Amino acid sequence: MNELIKKHISEHRSVFDSMMALSESIDDISKILIQCLRNDGTIFWCGNGGSASDCQHLAGELVGRFVGDRKPLKSISLTADTVVMTCIINDYGYENVFSRQIEGLGSEGDVLVAISTSGNSANVNKALQAANDKMINTVALLGREGGEAITISNKNILIPSYSTARIQEMHILIGHILCDLIEVGLKLK
Image (cartoon, rainbow, N blue to C red; front, side):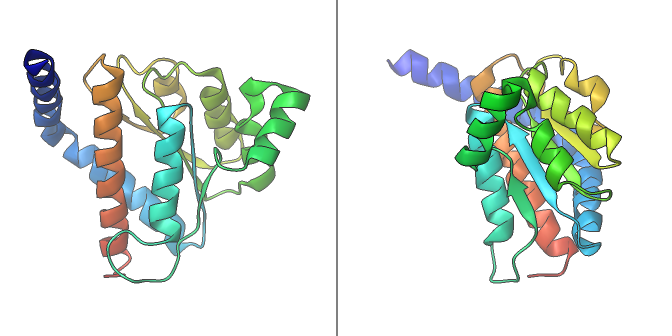
């Protein structure tokens, strides 16, 4: 058991150590998110499985608060409304569960943040395309080789790993950093 624990910690440390190379990309994306919120836009989030959970978590950090007490920010996880999701899945198929919401809720100047460890989820990629079609800025937090999503989104952060667990750990770290940069950038602290 001890060796398995050490293996996970070692893998985490290795991927974590590579994160400094992504700091400029994280900063660039934070500026896009800040500008969206300054212009009264909405930050949308989508992803599947653990990434769906991260979407809800990060939207909550923005609507609620990350560090300090401040006004709520416009942020919606497209993974959170089970009635809307099951209606769309039933009537239009799972591949349209996020794109249909973007088509109905999104406006030019908003931002869609897609979180995917593989970049090959049809529903996430359809949402990115729907957002692009509506002139909504698109950002993808990805892993592995980036999949199809890396060619669809306007901005990407690619975690240099093939381990879903390690990719997800870095995605939530990046999400927390973005939340902090947003609060500082909007001078909400």
